[in-house]
Image (cartoon, rainbow, N blue to C red; front, side):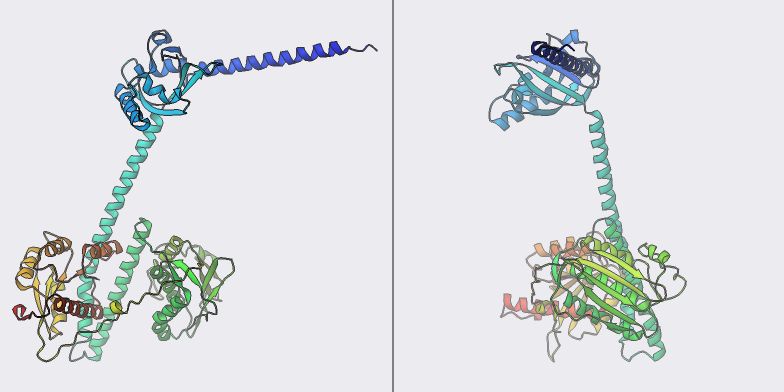
Length: 569
């Protein structure tokens, strides 16, 4: 059997290698040809001076020129928007602290210095029409690293620009809709709270009237108050849910002690549990657990779970609250009741707004909103909420939250939350309160409330201008101010009073149906001393009245210790 020589073998290897190289070159050539003849991209090559040397079919299609019309005739800046080229030259001159002339230099300056460059400018077609383009420009160099030309690869950016424009318009529309929704919510809050203010305010006055109501009258007043406060709760829940859904609800984040939260919850639900004969037990804490949450909103969610556990329980039932650390860094708060439990079908419907699981026509009162709101709030605080239940064996609703090593800062708020009433004394000077309010029922309610304070005289105005006149003429000790006044708003009135040296010192308390947190924050930032929302809670109103008058008296004495107040009587 013949054998091949080493030389034959070497020759064969060389032939095979050469064949592979030729095949690779052919493929490379085919690839280059495919790129250069592509109709999807504009490929333009220039010499070192910027004169076009290659103008591929894609460039012809996008720009409307035949290659023969541009090759060796023009440079790429001639098919760009000249104003944009000039603007690019100015921007680069400022950025690089050098002078760059408009024209091809403005396009190629970065590429000539080895800087990767992609820019967005407008291309101008042969027929004068325009389209936005995105262009990548690279310097072409020889073996000695000298620039021998430039390569510009461009693509029509119209679709992307159109999408961006549509997205921008959609976002602007959504923002406009959100602003309209926020304005609607604020207006709805005001319009619903204003009549409730009269209903609940006068009912509270009748309840504590002298002489006291008869038992029959007391029962009727009790029903009015119960229905009124329930309606207010419904309004608050609807507005809360709407704010959450619109993304307008702002939450604070603080380190909160679970032991303190549990103690507050126990105090708040004690009366309701006792009335229904339900025994409620809370955990004893051997370890101090802290969670990073909005304290008020956590309380809101927990009170909702506890209230439901009481309402939907059996007679003489139990509610057991427990805190369990199953996962590192997380704590689960469980609220277990001894009620009838829920089927899997009902559990799947639990977190749907206004769904009361078939109890709309009977059973305990409820809105079908509270649990949905609680879920949204807990999720906004990076927590989760869930339920486990068996029919006939009760339910366990749970909230899981992140633990934190931070400890809450205890701030002494006694000065602002513990209010010592200003008791009238024989011969004490009358204090003057001005109330600016355009609603007759609200005005009448405050008149009746002030009538029970023998050391206070009430002045009133039904529009902003008249209120300003009275404030300047009488210099009252304090002013109660509605926000939605005819003509100019209460916030504008406050600004006018603050700019007048004669009235700048008078504390002004807002009394408004605008009760959305954003409205309250806006009012306090504007400079109101306090912000009360309608419907009026009589005890809160009287405490605020006393605190404000006490502040006014102290402030006046500090400002002018020798002055008398007889001129204001």
